[in-house]
Image (tube, rainbow, N blue to C red; front, side):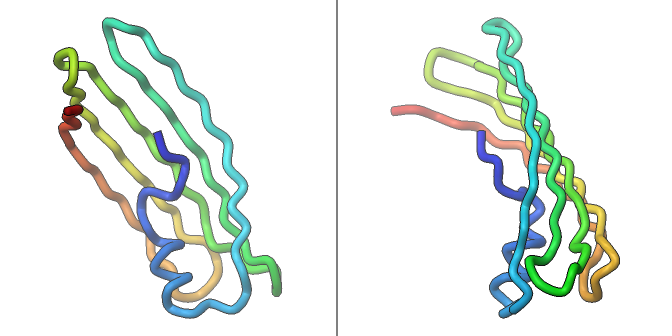
Length: 102
């Protein structure tokens, strides 16, 4: 499972040319049980490197369930809470995916 911000808020901000830099402090916990799949939760706190700006926080939830020997069903959710820095908007996203191995 990836530990990057799933809402892509920080990615879009960086590509827009933000010059203050980014700090991403994150904590993750997860568990895997063969018959039930795996569950991971990640908390991110985003701040600027310069000028002490609060870019917000995000909680990501990832669940993967093995459907067959080579297939997984995945559900991912991201809940971004905008900080006090200008230009950020609360963002929520949900994905449902299937992963096949060949």
